[in-house]
Length: 196
Ligand code: GAR
Image (cartoon, rainbow, N blue to C red):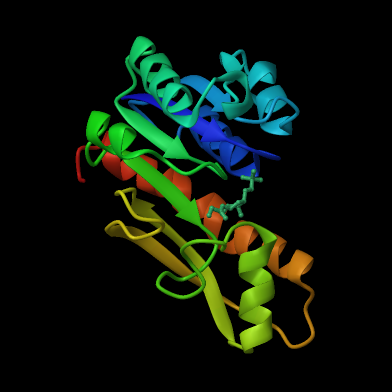
């Protein structure tokens, strides 16, 4: 299974996928390309260190959003990817992209969907919202991407307890360590095994 990974930031979820492949926990799959919307994303450096093609495709480089979305689809098709993984990708996916890769785009979200998801909930904001609401359990979700925001069918979820007094930054790391870095490689392996 050929995978294309879309990123925007630090790329720790990308790293978890790379590590799982190198440790033999993901089999029958290869990362063909990592694409970031943000030229400075450290995720691109992580890819290059492992000799994975790493590119930037920024909306700012295109005359309009439509041209950007078309270029992104074309690039993924050129690499002949079977699965698109959104690993901390903070750009909305176009309906054309969903149509080009039906049921073959997955996303990791740092909460137990349907809590703290949808428009405006990304990155640290998700954890700040969970703390503000005072929930005692949060977690992460891997789901298929449809035309909505965080609305596609859920593949896997893992719960994480919220200790009293934890900061949003520490909670973000706890959710990554206890849920995200485990779930995303596991979901990819399921798809590579033909179970989804
Ligand atoms: C992760 O926590 C991921 O779940 C989140 O962004 C972070 C990216 O970290 N994604 C979203 O909020 C999507 N709505 P990373 O670049 O270190 O993998």
